Length: 124
Image 1 (tube, rainbow, N blue to C red):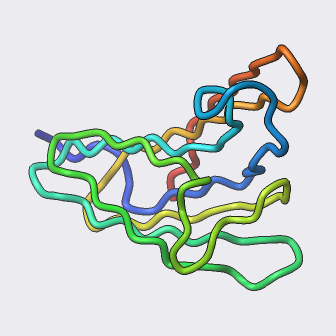
Image 2 (image 1 turned 135 degrees about the horizontal axis):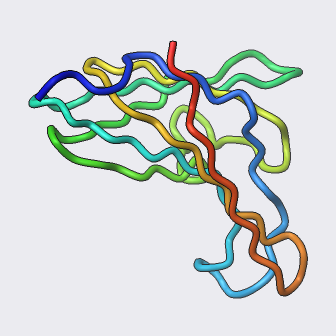
């Protein structure tokens, strides 16, 4: 299959919603990257988090199998350190093979409300 996507992607508008309202885990607020690897080789992905008032953190290492998808909650990234809640961030993803990257947010800060937002990441 022809290469789909790009090897470098940027998500400038991250913000882990906090606090959450409702039962966990289904009502926990989160940011998520959705990774599509249409290539015939496994993708080795490196993700770095950028803050407005601190040095970048990373790399966080993610693998996506050949011809597979993977959804990764930013909230679950803890090594080398947990991504900070309720703070603006951006991230850069670099992959060993071309990927397509989508960004998703679930915001449950308001009682009784679940807001979903999605956007395509920016390929470089």
